[in-house]
Length: 82
Image (tube, rainbow, N blue to C red; front, side, top):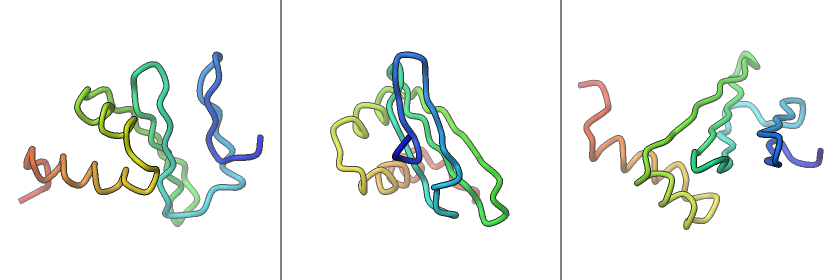
């Protein structure tokens, strides 16, 4: 495994040993966005997003646009704590 997150027919494989702390990694698997994040305590956090609007935008974006897509969606849907 050469990258921190890989997708194949069997599923998503994560290699936390090569992940940078405090950095999101993502992939698309079965029309879902899988987000993986290793925090400063080196705990691995995984999130699955099925929202079609987000999945479609991420599929058609550059890797470095993922964070801004998620931030825009959060702001649009007013999901941030008030």
